[in-house]
Every structure is written in C-alpha cells, then in structure tokens.
Length: 389
Image (cartoon, rainbow, N blue to C red; front, side, top):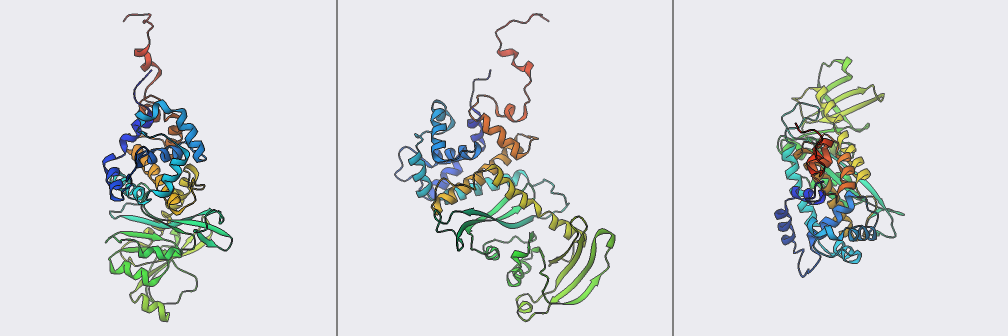
C-alpha cells in the first residue's frame, strides 16, 4: 500500500502558495497572528467545502480526529471553533477574493482553447446573478425584502470552461443592472445577458468600447424599423431588422442603430426577441449564443448543490463573503485539477471523490482516475509469486 502523502496534501500542490502569501501581505492578514494563520483558515474552510461540513463545531471535531495528519497537510495551527469563527469575522475577505482572482487567471489559461459549442475566435461571456436567501434576524445587513434577507452573487462567466472571471457579492436589494458599471469591458468580446440588464444608457457604453452585447427585448419597447434582411424561417428565425429606438429618453440613451432578431423556439413554444449591436454575425448564431447563456445557470445550480453557500458559518458581512469566495476557489481548484490531470469525471464527481479520500495516503491520480489496477499492488505484497517466469 502507498504510504506517502495524503490526497489533501497533494491537492495543495495546485494552489500557488506564493501568490496567496502576497494577498495576505497586501491586507496585513497575519498581523499579530501567532498560531492560526490565514493559510490555516483557508485550508480549514476548503476542507469544510469539500467534505460538506455543517457547522464550525463539525469542522473542529473532524479535523481534530485527523490531528496527526494535519501538519503534513499544511495546517500548522490548532483548529478551534472560536479561533476559526473569529478569523472568518475579522480577517479581510479581500484576501480570498484576490486569491480567487489568481486561480481564475490560471483556470482561464488552461481552458482558453476549449470549445463551448460555437466556433468563434472571440471571448464570450455570460452575465447573471443568483440570490441566496438568508434569515433577516441573523443577517439584518443583507437587505432584500421587508421580512426577508438575501445576498446576490453577480457573476460574469467565461463560457470556455465555465470559469467565473468577475464576481461581485451584494445585498439582495441591489438591482442587477448596477453591476454593468463595475465590469471592465474588453474590446471585441461578446457579452450575453438577460432582460434584467436592459438599460440603454449602459448598453451604449458597450458600443463605445467596441464590444458586442446580446440581450432580450422587453415586450413594450418602442422602435422604428430602418431595414430588414431575409431569413430562413425553417430554422426558427422570424425576422432580422435594423432599428432605431423611438422613445424620447431611450433614443437619447442609445442614439445608434440596433439589430432586432425575432426567433421562435419550438422546444418551449415561445417567441424570443433579441437585441444586439453586432451586425456581422449571422442571425442564427446570435440565437445560439444566447442559448449558451444557460451555462451560467448550470454554474449557479452546481455551486449551490456541491458547495456550502446556502448556510453560513458566520453572520457578519466579512464571514459571508469569505465563505463564498473560498467556495468559488474550491470550484476553480477542481477545474484546475481536472485539466491538469486530464480527468474525465465531471467537477461534481471529482468533488465527491475528494470528499471521502482527502486523508487517504494514495496518489491523487489514482483516486481520481483509477489508473492503478489490482495487479499493480503486487510489488507491495510480501508473498512470493507462485510461478517464476
């Protein structure tokens, strides 16, 4: 039997420790810290995410059970419920946000050549948000409704590899359209968003920055048709028009021409109307790109199913943001491991395998790929071979 490093220890090889130390120093995370460092906090919270721990006491009990192995896994400080709670509450959440940014850069490089269903030589992003419901009594700062609290996770996702490249965590009352002011636009990129981001003054900045946006039109918006193009109605397309906004305020907010594409989706028996500032791509490609936006919905479903972001280990703003950013880091780490080791399993399967094998002393490739067969263990057996060949 292999008696080397634990799977948890090997998993940490994919984390750039030097970059994490730079993030810690940037915000003085280890100032006057003697025993329980920011890296210890990160590893404990990652352990909680991977193994689906329910509470701080649950984390403490499980890690203390593995006390002889913790040092070799990178956890140098003594794990205590109170110490971890104070660390989540007091240590700046931006440490883990910046470190997630480092992992995002690594993951995007690994998935840069992946195919997302449409052959394009441009960066394609999907923008959306998900709401995480909270208890108003425990989280009074997370304003949402009169008797309800919530936080929103606004995400801009690179469709190549489904890698989130921009995340902003706000209270539930923040409207989605305000996040358009926070995004740094890339010239030539394509941004796909739903009707919640329909603000013509903000969308005009996409055109000024030479970016493409694709969104859905509201049913009551006023426009004037300038010209139209012939479409093949057997593909589901109904019209492809060049329009100008006719409303008094909207025409001032967006003075340029727009492209209006009408499409009938036979799968859901619904007519969809898209608006874009791109006149070069075929109309059917525009509709297919918007359909790819569904990947971000799957991303939100994945993190809520496999990561601990629906219940929190602390009630302060800092504790909530710290936990969400570390959860995103675990998602990115799983994506990096999948690509680096060429693992065929899905990210969910990888996380499930890791959840039961973190402290096993076996090669991580064997745990995730089962490359080692039964015959490969013969070299560790003391019993002699029956036949000498």
